Structures are given as structure tokens and as C-alpha cells.
Length: 206
Image (tube, rainbow, N blue to C red; front, side, top):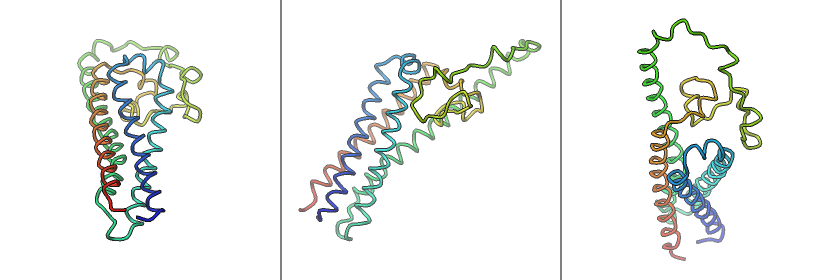
């Protein structure tokens, strides 16, 4: 194995290992830390960690792909492709599950509102009471789109249901429980990908 190929594989495996570690920490925190603490006090930290995990996932995928396609034919082992797909498959899984869950929640909410809508006809809520300004106190990271301009989290409910951005702050305990379960699935996938990549790298002939 050439020095250049060894460097690219080393960066890829290291990135995937840290990525799997971040997901593991996130899974543990989602079970141990109350949901209101995360939404009210740790949103900025969670967003920053998510950005770091995304960067590491891209780094891992890019260097595993480079290690596979840049290697001679006899050194193009399948584990390089499997490892390169860990981050994209994880992101796609979480995105699909998020949209599916929020759409199901929106349909259920609409059906409930339809049943009780007749009892609330004629009641008009002033605009000032319904608008929530989260611009200065939202504690979003630097460079994050300000919520007061209508920015909505791509993994949140508001972007799917076309609700106001502040609707993303409201989450039921059941929603957090489902998210923790799906995050655990993705964590298991990342750990399996990291383990097989380490075995693959150290199992290759020098």
C-alpha cells in the first residue's frame, strides 16, 4: 500500500471514527437528558455538533471514495465503498424518517382540528399574540439563519407542514422518543461501518 493511499485511508477512518463517536454521544444524551433541557438550553450546542458531524461525514465519504477509485484494481476492496456510504445513508435515513413522521403528525393534527374546528369558529386571535420573536434570544450559532426571518430547521416539522418557524420548538415526548430510537439505529450503522473499516485497513497486506 502506497504512502498516499495510506494517508487517505487514515483520514477516512479517523473521520468516520469521530463521526460514530458523535452519534454515540448524541444517542446517549437523547436518552439521559430531558427533552426540554435540550430544546431550551442546548439548541446552540446541538446545532454546532450537528454541523461538525456533517463535516466529518463528508470528509469520511470523500476520502474513502478517493481511496477506492484512486487505488489500483487489486486494492479496490469492498469495505472502502461500504464505509463511504455510512454517512450518506445515515443522513438520508434521518431526513426521510423526519419528513415521514412530521407529515403523519400534520395529518393527525389536521384531523383533530377538523373535529374541533366548529367549536372555535368566530374566535379571532390578535396577530400580536400569535407572533413569537425568537431572533435575539434563540441562541443559534453564528452564521445560522435567524429564526425571526422565517428560517426553519430542515429536520423540523415547520418546513414540512408550512407552519411558522416557532412551531419547531413544540415537541411531544413521543416525538423525542422516536427520534432517539432512530438515532440509535443510525449510531449502530456508523459503529458497524467504522469497525469494518478498521478491520479492512489493518487486514490488508502491507
